[in-house]
Structures are given as structure tokens and as C-alpha cells.
Length: 356
Ligand SMILES: [Zn+2]
Ligand SMILES: [Zn+2]
Image (tube, rainbow, N blue to C red; front, side, top):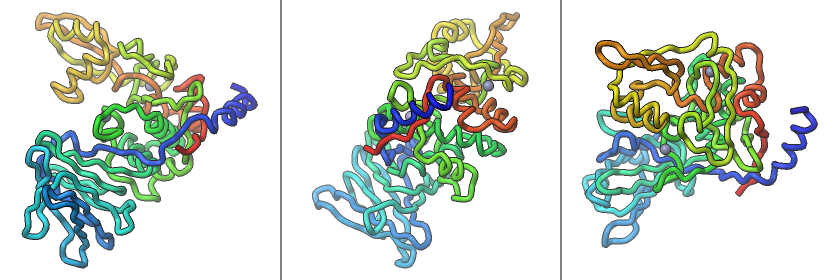
């Protein structure tokens, strides 16, 4: 696309793609938690508003200087059980924010398993005996957090910027993949951990591309990305997925063509047949049952030996959209984030959406 045409596309689309400023991320759901500890960070207060069963709304403040800086939440059916000091109360929901009802920093921990710091507003409810914590955070905080979690540590800034635009586009497209929140924090949506420090390359990549998203026919693209491919990216149809909106295009990936990441797995005859027929859906099903490395990609050939079926493949992930290994190599060769995005998402435009 010439510069003139690209500029035209940019101006044309700038007001047509709407963008939400916050995203609601369901966190720690992978652990199906029954117990969560919520803690303040030094210098910040956490104002907790709860709807106490048969007693109405109550407000508590957690603050280190007051000596009360943490609370434990457990679950009973669809109710929360909160430990406030020595008191146990039953509540139907919980909302935690700063003193001015805005974003704040806090730590959520599942005892013995994980502890993560977040920056946002927290809501917790119980659904059928499981705690569902949802962090409402600024879009750019979410983008930087995903770029940090999803990228290899030695990835150059231009590749991180391409990842930031892909991530922001995914959030902006708002696919409604979950009932109680917009996105989860696993690779089902996008992997999200703690927000990185402002001086990190992930934060710099988000800031440098602030607001930019990919658009196709006036709509934000729910930009998919993959860890590596086998020398060319795939369309959703090739791996048995339907694509709404952007159809994707198969792009040659020079780095993976020359340096494919090979793998070998042994499967049953029935599994091999199922994988051939159902592509990505069957691969994810197998990964869910046997672990995320059970079948790294859909790019494989099958051969039989005396013991059964052997799959020999290359690449990691569904193979659709931006290839992170290829993008990293393009950045090392001097490509800009715009060139990386044009390569892996052909026929899209870079736009700044209007605010909702
Ligand atoms: Zn999800
Ligand atoms: Zn690749």
C-alpha cells in the first residue's frame, strides 16, 4: 500500500472504530479458587464495599497504617465469606477501589499457589462455589501487562510494539468470549500477569503505540498471534476455525522457514484421526486434557510405527496472525512495527479509534 493510500485509510477510519477505555479481565480463574487473600500495597488504601446478606451495604478500609491490610475471602455457594478482623460476614458481592472510587494497586493471592499485583478496580463474586475475581483496568495497563507476559525477554522494541498493537486490537474488538467479564488472563484470550514497571520495554512498547489498533473494513481486528509457525502462517479455515470479520491471509515467515521449531509426539490412531478432521479444536481439547505442550501446533505429518502413530511437526500455537518468532527476527533485521504488522496482517489499516 502506498503511503498516500495508507494515510487516506487512516483518516477515513479514525472516527469509525469505537474503543472502550477499560477492560474487565477475569483473573486467576485457571485455579478455580475457593479462597483468595486480598492485600493492600504500602501507601495505598483499599476501600471495600460489600452487600452483606440481610444487613445491606457495608464499607471496610484496608490500609497498612491502620494495622489491617489484608482480608481473606472464601466461598459458600453463591455467597462470599469475608474475614474482617476477627469477624466473619456473608456477602453477595464485593467491590474494592481507592478512596476516590478509582483504580488502585492491590495483591490477590491464592494461598500456596500464586500471588499477583494488579492495578485497577476489583470486583469479586461467587458462582457455584467458585470465586470469580474481575479486575477492571485501563486498556493501556492491560496492553502492557499482556506484552510483558506474552513476549520472549530478549524481544526488540519494534516487535514488542507490533505485539502491543495486536493485543490492543484484540481487546478493542471485544468478542464477548466470557459471561462474567470481557477477557480471561490465560492464552484462551491473552496471557496477562502483573503490570510491568514503566521503564520496561513492554510499557515503552504500549506507550509508543498508545491507542493504535488494526482495522479491517472499519472494524477493529481481534488480532490473533502465535508463538511460532512452520514457515508460513495459516488462515482460520485451514485449522478448522471460522473467522468473523478479518479473514487473515497466509504469510510467508522467513525466520521459521529457516529455523523451524520441530517437535515429535506419539498419539493413538483415534487421536490422530480426530486431529486431522477437527484441527485447532481437537488440538486445544487434547492440550486441555494432557497439558499445554501435549500438541504444540497443527502443522505435522503422521506416520505409523510398531507402537502406533507418531506426529512430527513444527511451530507452536495455532499458526494464525502475527508469528512472534518471525516478528522478533524481523525486528532484529531492522523492520519497524508497521512493517511487521503489514507483513502478518495484510490488508489491514492502523487506526486510532474514537472513544466510546
Ligand atoms: Zn478467555
Ligand atoms: Zn513464523
